[in-house]
Every structure is written in structure tokens, then in C-alpha cells.
Amino acid sequence: MRPGPRNLITDVTGLRVGNAADARLKSGVTVLTADRPFTAAVHVMGGAPGTRETDLLSPDRLVQEVDALVLAGGSAFGLAAASGVMEGLRAAGRGYAVGPLRVPIVPAAILFDLLNGGDKDWSDNPYPALGRAALAAATADFALGTEGAGHGATLSGLKGGLGSASANLANGMTVGALVAVNALGSATADEAGRFWAAPFEFGTEFGGLGLAQIARPDRDPLPSKAPGEATTIAIVATDAALTKAQAHRMAVAAHDGIARALVPSHTLLDGDLVFAVATGARSLTDPISDQFALGHAASACLARAIARAVHAARPEPGDLLPAWRMRFSG
Image 1 (cartoon, rainbow, N blue to C red):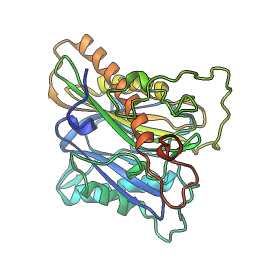
Image 2: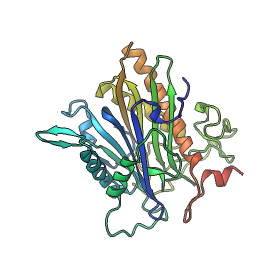
Image 3: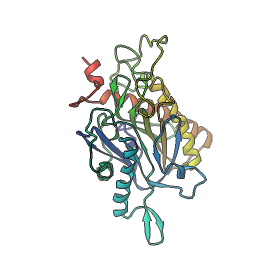
Image 4: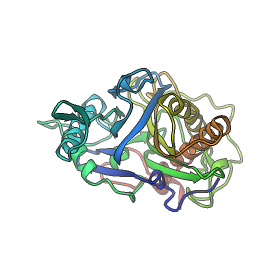
């Protein structure tokens, strides 16, 4: 298993990601889409999720594919970003056919960034426009850190951000992860800023600092955010041909990546959620071993993507917390 050429979720051929943000608002939206509809599933392990249209991702639901997935800031206001994405997709002729009409299928998940120092005194909800702008910006190459849904994200003592990573597997399949990190827990394990995800790092993709010497197992973490204010929302993707049930199992496995990269994670105060995407370009040759490999790769990619998000965050005017580079890079 090695990173793909971009080390982004878009190393899964056909996927595109777009970001849009408002620096004054200190918030934004990230959209994942593709040239054609794709299989998607979801698994939630946090105690305070915020979602739209996730029920239809269950294997027994009528609709089997979606047109885009949305990660957004703004708490419940951010769910409106999916409406802007729907309008953009509808204008492009995309969506589930209902007679002469098409209804784009756009599940979404949100994080809480309403108390991060940005100006939230809007007269009209800004998230539909941000969603449509993010869709219009979707491409194979995109920036990490203080971008898109991660623009105003925070975690324990640091700015959060948007992260991504990928892996090419020995079986020829590709896996990628995309994440907006806004967690209650910490991504760093010691006073030198080493990451909990260090065992899974390739090269220097998040600094090459190595393992923490002292992880402080005696430290009892205390919540630094109120209920509903912390969420890590992610997407893992593969070019394998998976059913919705198989994609769901990949999402379940990917949650291990959150636990490896954020301590604590999956708390009552977090809304941790993972979407799983399968484009169907490669058939499974061995349904058991291939799914095993996909689950492990998804969790490792997600751990790396979380660390990359925090490592890449940049300082902005009005920040209430420092970026990793300001606190640890010297």
C-alpha cells in the first residue's frame, strides 16, 4: 500500500472535489462529486450528528446511487449547502429521473463552527451559495488545511481543517479519504506536536516527526467544547464495485482511522460520521480478502488525512486558536 500520485481522494479515478469558503464568515463547504452517480453508504459513531438525506443510503432503500456528497460548516444552517449543490446539478441535467424531471440526490453532513470568531450575523443563509460555488469548483486537485468545510474548524487547542490522503493497494484497487476535522479530541500526542496518526504516515506528509515519546496515558481529557460543537465528518472512497451494504462495512472500518488519529474520539459530544463511496470501476476478485484490504486501507487513509488537515491549517485574522504550524513548526 502506497499513496497515489496526488495523495488525495481524487486518486480514485472519476472523483472530483470542490471547496468554497468565506473568510469573514470563517466557514465553508466541500463537495465530492463524479461524472456519473456512485454508490454511497454512511455510518455514524458520534453522539451529536447533523445530516441530510442519510436515511436513503441504507441498503434497503430505493435509490442506489447519489450524485454528490456535501461536508459543510455552519451547524444546521450548513445543511442548506446541499440545496445549492442540487441546483447546480439540476442545471447540468443530473439527478434521479422522476418523469420528465430530475432530482439530484445529495446527502450532507455538517460540523459546528458558529463560535470560531467569524461573523455569523448574516441576513440570508450563505450556505446554498457556498454549496453551489463548491460544486462549480470541483476538480481533481484541491487544497488542504484552511479550506472548504475545514475553513473554520477547530479541535483541542488548535485549528482543524480539511484533509485528504490516498493509497494504491496490492490488489490494484485505490482507496482515498477526505475529512473535515472539528473534533473535541486532540490530533497531537505530545508537547512537540507529534501526531497520534504517526504510525501510518508516508514520508513527511504531515511533517515526518515520528512517534510521540510520551503520550501521557495518565492525562484525563476534559471536554473543551459544549454538546453539539464537535464533529469529524469524512468520506472514504474506492474504485471497487461495492454494494451499498459492502460500502457500509468500509465506512464502519474507516472509523478506526478517526480513533487512531484523534484522542478521544466518538464521544457523546462529537458527531463523528463517515460516508463511503464506491465508483464501481474494478470488480472484486475475492469478496472476502478484497473487502478486508479495503477496510484497512480506508482506516489508515482516514487517520493520515486527519493529521494532514491539522498540519496544513494556516493562520487567519481573527483566529481564536493557533494553527499547528504556528505552535509547533518553529
